[in-house]
Image (cartoon, rainbow, N blue to C red):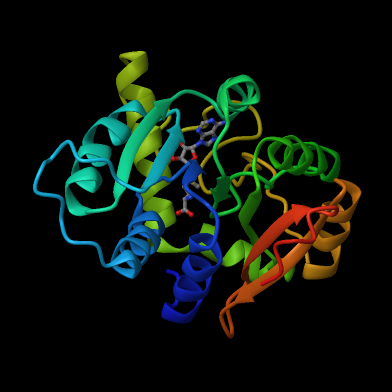
Length: 248
Ligand SMILES: C[S@@+](CC[C@H](N)C(=O)[O-])C[C@H]1O[C@@H](n2cnc3c(N)ncnc32)[C@H](O)[C@@H]1O
């Protein structure tokens, strides 16, 4: 969750000169809705009598999850007075290509939950550079927890086990076979059997200093960093280094 102070500061920062937001991978839209609601309220405009009346801000959600966009975007659009909500179904790379040739307004790209920078350093540098080429402000959430025990803890909690079990049952359903992946006793293949752990994917965490170095390599600077006490996540507000006119 985004704390009230972080939300208000971000909205104040955005309100000064941004009129279009692109969000990369909104997921369940919880953070999105918190921020957009604050921004909508900050404007304090009366609800336009005409439903087609022009709104000041455009919010574009980019995600490969088509169902989630189709369900949530119309709901969000109805909730706000001053924000036009739009969904772009596709990959981040496709959105980037599209923006290179079409973008003209004052734009901010935001991405939370490490969606954009959970990658090796060279990829993270490339992403930050590419996105700051097409926007005026980049806001990135990135996990800074580097303590291995802390990082591994969520992967051993009951709800994560339930998530994996659902996936194994689904795999059996798709294969049309009973209890191959979902079996708790059978050996699936050499090396994988009951209670064995496998590395499914790599996850990249960066300490603040490390992330600032990545941002600098991309030719940008971190203007603000937000963190909640005791939480590993950080929110970085990033600009190209030469854009010094956007002091917070
Ligand atoms: C970790 S989840 C959501 C995180 C969310 N921003 C948050 O902080 O709670 C990642 C989201 O990004 C989307 N996504 C991941 N990679 C993508 C890609 N390359 N192109 C488009 N959408 C992507 C997924 O469908 C999902 O909605």
